[in-house]
Amino acid sequence: MEIRIEGKNCVVTGANSGIGFATAEALASRGATVYMVCRNKEKGETALSKIQSSTGNPNVHLEVCDLSSISEIKSFASRFSSKDVPVHVLVNNAGLMEQKRVTTSEGFELNFAVNVLGTYATTELMLPLLEIASPDARVITVSSGGMYSTPLTSDLQFSDGKFSGAEQYARNKRVQVALTEKWAEMYKNKGIGFYSMHPGWAETPGVAKSLPDFNKWLSGKLRTSEEGADTVIWLALQPKEKLVSGGFYFDRAEAPKHLKFAATRQSHAIIDSIVDTLRSL
Image 1: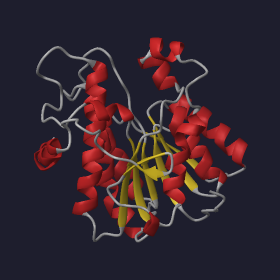
Image 2: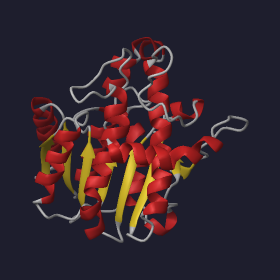
Image 3: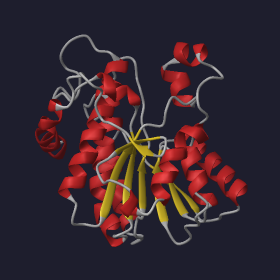
Image 4: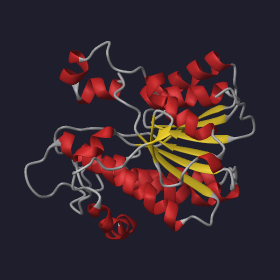
């Protein structure tokens, strides 16, 4: 974990607070050039100056993009591609749990738009820049242990039944793990490693906002954002031959993707049709 990564370019989404901020700060402290992708310009600028000041690294940059919007992601990817910089590490950290059903201006359910469609679009559009950085390129997606509770479903936008933000979040996180497996298989010859991880339950602004009772009940017992980000940093720094592309990691070790006796394993068979749906959107 003491390794220096000067000359490496790292893109971190949702980097202005919580695990994203801790990740961006830890990568910057090791000498990386860090691009913080944030929805809110003011919050992003505040976080950026904090990181530059705490790490002494001037090579930290802000990219403003609302990851719930496909048109904004396309615009960001186009702007970023024109820099012509290889992307060594892409951290898909941006995520949210909205308890009520909210539809974006593009017509997508909000949790799905950020957690699944945003993650998918960002990764696919960054592939050419990741390829330039191969064989050292890697994509790390911050999932959640919540995904253990639910199988993969083709009802991506929770159109059937009474909407539950917590269940939709768990479904979204299951998609991220299955997508990571699929990317590893699809792009195995491109020199890019794909990893998903579970940060543990950390006391972040996102948890405080979306699960206030849970956050209050376990106040002081949850992990810090830095502890939550630890495995992300570990995955970014490990020699790739020590990692399993497509793997799911927790506390610096590969973890099972399915609980015993949970009917989730077979559900991953529908990932191809889910990828087709995401591509069409």
